[in-house]
Amino acid sequence: MKLSGWGRFPVVDCRLETPRSEAALKGLLHEGPIIARGAGRAYGDSALNAGMTVSMVRFNRMLAFDPSRGLLTVEAGVMLGDVIATFLRRGWFPPVTPGTKFVTIGGMIAADVHGKNHHGAGSFGAHLAWLDLMLADGSVVRCSATENSELSHATIGGMGLTGIILRAAFTLIPVETAWIVQRTVVTTDLDATMATFEAAAETTYNVAWIDCLASGKSFGRSLLYLGEHARLDDLNGAKRPEPFLTQRKKTKRIPIDLPSFLLNRLTVQAFNSFYYWNGKQGPRQRLVDWDTFFYPLDALLEWNRIYGRRGFVQFQCVIPQSRSRDGIAALLREIAASGQGSFLAVLKLLGRQESIFSFPMEGYTLALDFPATPGALALLERLDRITLEHGGRFYLAKDARMRPDTFAASDDRLAKFRSLRQNSGALDRFASIQSERLAL
Image (cartoon, rainbow, N blue to C red; front, side, top):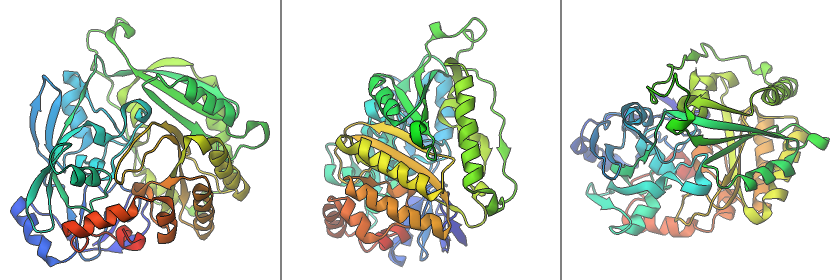
């Protein structure tokens, strides 16, 4: 069947298998290189293999919970949204979450997702107690900080290329309510935006929407959203008796692929100007429910259809802290000059992280969406070069088109990762279109 990532680019004819047991999954290993697939929310081709893509959606059971430690054990196909639906009302929340709840735990581990709290909490992998991994020969090993530690670190952020994640245990964090105290800070330029991030380093959640087409004195203007889990004392009388009860969020669906001509410099510039103006008019501090704060785009189902039938590509890089100001500024100038702005331009400050192959490092990460047009693809090549010039690297969960030499130049950990794959037998057994394109 035809499959794609969330960006709907590329679309590939794939053989799709959906095993219901470990035995059935093991039986597929001898049929050639395969790749596991969760909810299909990686943006590009990292969960696609034309020869065989293995859906893990049947591995969807929650297995155990230890309330004394907040330790939850699940199969890899369990959805993050189901974890929240089950445990938030009991006073527990995921320690790290990406911008959508429609992802599987296995996918979160494979991409080692980071959230708005990376500067303090690290990535999702930092909260794993262990994971069970099916290797190239069909055997299953437990991986943790003390068991098969090198394989464990390579699997966290390894994009499914070390084996198939079957189960995992991770810690949830205790919360008193389902609400977030959100503070909005309006900044007028890039220097003010970065200064606000630095000043808010002790805040649990920090993220900025940045106007990537603004220029002159408004260059880099942003809306920063700072958040803390609300305590009972933060709730008013009406909310306090039911601190985990929030109004069910209404969802809308994009029913058709929108015409591509609707996305142009004028419409993106108009949207960005309105969004910034609207943010300036709103309250500086308010209570918002967890769904609104963490997953605003989930309210618009199939929002990827906004970009039309050709789909879209996302660019996400991280620039090391010492070079972030110049690097982010150079990226924004290139985007503004091209006129190919992004509705969804997100800036975050990441903390320190040492890993075998995970994306985050200390610095600023910028993520942007562009329609998959020849002009946008050419722009992304230029953004690649700027990233390399400033010592940055790229997020594989968002990539759909990078060149192998670009990726190799960005990450000196690649040789070690390839060697580990070779020595474990994974190189010939687990492969995606992305891994073949980038020679991973």
